[in-house]
Image (cartoon, rainbow, N blue to C red; front, side):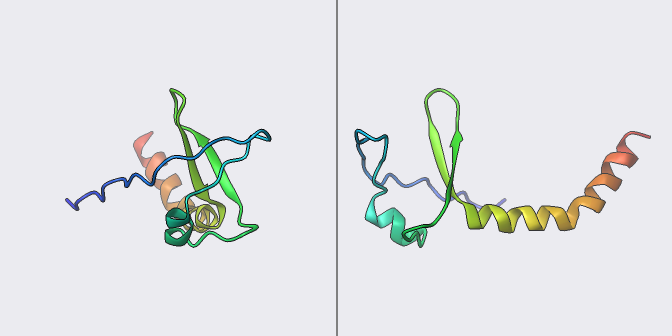
Length: 80
């Protein structure tokens, strides 16, 4: 099994009066975030939120789409 990379702590941020937050510079640099980039916002249960760069999700979605026939075959074989 591979080792899991630890989840780094990047500090804190404050919600402004319009509900906006500032993503710390270190995170923006590491994730190569730029003005205008789209982020997806996920509820993680229990008052936690996670952000993901939309372009990475689109890559993942394309990969899954390419694997869809194989996944359907596996499911079909499991149901017989």
